[in-house]
Each structure stands twice: as structure tokens, then as C-alpha cells.
Image (cartoon, rainbow, N blue to C red; front, side, top):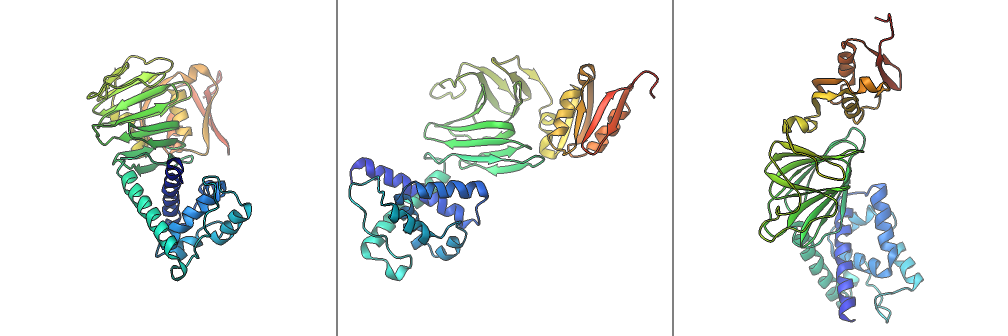
Amino acid sequence: MNASNAQIREAIAEQAAEWFIENRGGPLDREASARFMAWLQTSPVHVEAYLRIAALAPDYGEAAKTLPTPLEALLARAHADNVFPLDTARPEPLPALKRRRLRSWSMAAAAVLVFVAITTIWVTRDGQRFGLPRTFSTAHGELMVQSLPDGSVLHLNTDSEVTVRYGRGERLVSVDRGQALFEVAHQDRRRFRVQAGEAGVIAVGTQFDVYRRPDRVRVTVLEGTVAVFAGSSPRSVPGDPLAVHGVRLDEGNQVDVTDRVGAPRQVDAHAAVAWLSRQIDFEEEPLGEVAAEFNRYSRIGFVIEDDTLRALPVSGVFDAYDTDSFAAFLATLNGVVVQRTPRQILVRRAAAGEP
């Protein structure tokens, strides 16, 4: 086996270890199960790596029960395909799944794989090596809190999705949709970068919120300082991860990013992240935007077709899930009529002579 193949085998062993840990945690959901099966079926070498790690685990039997397809069936399918892309020679037959039937060469190979896997697991958990990308998402009305490998904490708002990639040079989180708040653990050697469409944020030991809206990205800083930029990621200067071509945003400030970074403004940062407490806090905000926020949590949404009414500034603090209270509040506004149907809450201007 040449050096290149050895590196590929090591990478496969690392992936196998990650998948074994996922399976030990209980049955995979439909999406994860599909990804796992696709990974296994990519090559018989993947099946070998997984089996060798699983064979030495004391709770292999329990973990195997969670698999969508028995490992024996996968193994038989792999050998039937007769495809071994990493080596010119066909590997030796796999050992039996039970400890008492493992051959000495298999034990040695499995021990090496387990050592590599365990080392990789610990190092990856510590954030020192590149780990496989992880995607976290929430459904409509759902919130999530997730600890990241480096000690940072991710708070995910309703109907949101982020992808986390940790490498040697930086920690990168992509906000694919929705809103996330980050509590960043400080690291001298690796910057923490968030990308949301054309907007980017670089932070060191801080707390900030990134909200990816259809027409812009809004960044709010709760603690510390971040650098906000538009377009491709700038390079940081050694010793100063925030020395970039962008706008420095301090605690208690907020900025909107489109194709460029707007002017920073002071805001009530904690009101901007009231969603952490399942609230919507707005001060002189356009009614259309406030209604859109409520629609992120409720199954019955507000509909406002009048542009002038959508621009009406309103203020208040409401439970994000309490659409009834917000509808009652709107009904108290002069010249505003609220009509409820089983599917929506229509907000319109009162017609002439209508109370």
C-alpha cells in the first residue's frame, strides 16, 4: 500500500468511527440513515472499516440493531460487487463478527483502526483537526441549542439551518437560512467565521446574532467585537484576526448587509435576540416585518396586502407563539380591521363607514 492509499484508509477509518458513534446514539433519522447507507455503499473498503471498528466494541450487538440494513448483508453485497478501488490486490477476507473468531492479523489491523479512530474522535472533539461538516436545522416553530467541538455554543432560531466546518486554519459556520446566535470560544490560532450569503462575520471570543433574511443579512453584537464584510472572505492578519477589510462592529451595535455593509447603528441588542426567550420585541418597526416574524412561529399566518399598512410603525413585546394577543393588539389600532379564517389572519384597512 503506498502513502496515498494509507492516507485514504486513515480518512475512511475516521469516517467509520464517526458513523459508529452516531449509530450508538440510537436509530438514525431518515436523512442520516440515507447518508450512512450511501457512505457504506460507496466502496467495500468503507464496509470493512466500519466492521473492524464495530467488531471490537463491547456493545456491538446493540449498535448493530439500529442499522437500517444488517452489516452481514452489506458485507455480502460488498464482496459480491468485487470492487476494491484503493489497492491493486484484493484484501484478505474480513474476520468474523464475534471476538472469538477474529484472526491475529485482523486483531492487529482492527487495533490500529480503533487507535486512529479514537485519536481522531478526541482531536476532532477538541477542535484541533478537520472534522466532517455537520448540519443543524430547526423546523417551523422549533428552537435549538447545540454545543460545538471547540466549546462554542450555537443557538438556532425557528426554521433555520447552519453547516459547521472546522479546519486547521479556521472555524467556519455557514448560515444556509434563518437565524443563529453564536457564543464563540476564544482561540488564538483559528478565527471563527460565519458566512451568510454575501455577508461574512469574523469574531474572537464574542456573542453575536446573524439573521439571514431574503433581502439582507442583519448582524447584531451582544458582547465583544466582530468584523463584518460583504463578498469573498478577507484574510486576517496574524496576531489580529479582526484586522480585515470590513466594518468593525462593537457590542450593542447592529448592521445590515446586502451587496455592501451598511452603516452600524446602536440598538437594544438583547431585544434583537428576544427570540432566545421565545419573544418578539419590536420598537417602531414596520408592521409588515413584525407580522413576518410572527409567521415564522405560527401555523396560521398574518396576511397584510396593503403596502401603506405594512409600513405602519408599531411597538410591543409579545410571546412569539401567541398570535391571538398580537391580533388583538392590531385590532386596537385606529382604522385597522382584523379578520380570522381557519388558514390565515387578514389585516386590512377599514372601509369607509366601517367601524
